[in-house]
Figure 1 (cartoon, rainbow, N blue to C red):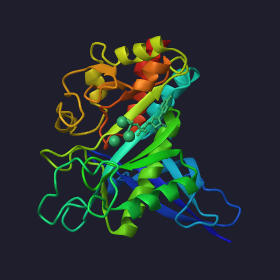
Figure 2 (cartoon, rainbow, N blue to C red):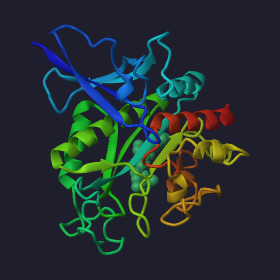
Figure 3 (tube, helix red, strand yellow):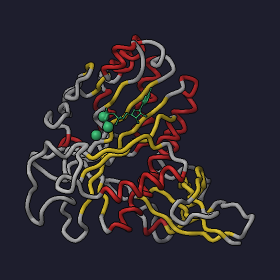
Figure 4 (cartoon, rainbow, N blue to C red):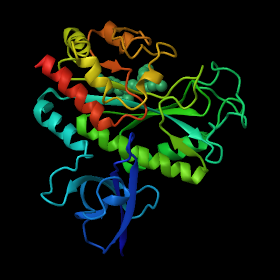
Length: 337
Ligand code: ADP
Ligand code: MN
Ligand code: MN
Ligand code: MN
């Protein structure tokens, strides 16, 4: 019987790229191949030269349709010479992996997001036009007063597991209507593949629940936590000895590096990295054991065990995981080489 392949790609929306998808019906036995789309409708081409190529790079079972149906994540290529489109950030993650793959870089991403009422744009759990009780009881909270959207979270997690994605956990966050899921630990390219696929499934779960998913970094101004994408990182050397852990943390503070990294860590980073709400200021760099007010945290159990990983707390929820993973791989692996 014919089956469906949902082709998924990352568009050229500024300043934050978005996910797009369309369906191809395939005859039984046919494989999904190269396809294309109208780049003039996704900010990826002009109308007079509109075709952009879709090259399948990662596929998994489609947990929404079930059966033989699949999800197909694609890279975007230029028709002229089949080279990566300028908006194709996965190419940069591949290059980092080609250069430093022997160090076995691993990533665990903590994707925070906010559920919004599509009619008002107000977070789920916020009374219409008003504010809930201050932050405190919501993080990992339980109960109808504190929690909104758990059905959506459970649907999303089930789909990620059925798709075979490396989802490693979920939790309710500090601000009402804000949640997190984690992907990892997997390598520099895979973490982006799985995270973008998980984002796609999250938006789809939102369609079912009638809630819009936002990865904006500071959806509510004022005394409410922003949404980040804490990035946990290790190499084979860091997983063996503490000197390597410190070398990686220090490399991120070397001259010019904080600016280079922040430029790739998502739009609106100055609004989120204020020095309040468990962040370090965007214009300061620090690292420390157990310190959630540092740019880079070394988890306490890593200091105790004398090996493990670092947590870069700076990336925004709206960052591109391919860009973040490439930056960390290039900076830390160069220092550890
Ligand atoms: P937090 O305490 O900051 O909320 P989480 O439990 O949400 O931490 O996320 C930790 C992430 O770190 C998980 O995705 C996990 O898979 C990942 N992780 C664990 N060990 C490593 C490692 N050695 N290298 C990279 N990532 C790791
Ligand atoms: Mn977390
Ligand atoms: Mn969190
Ligand atoms: Mn964290």
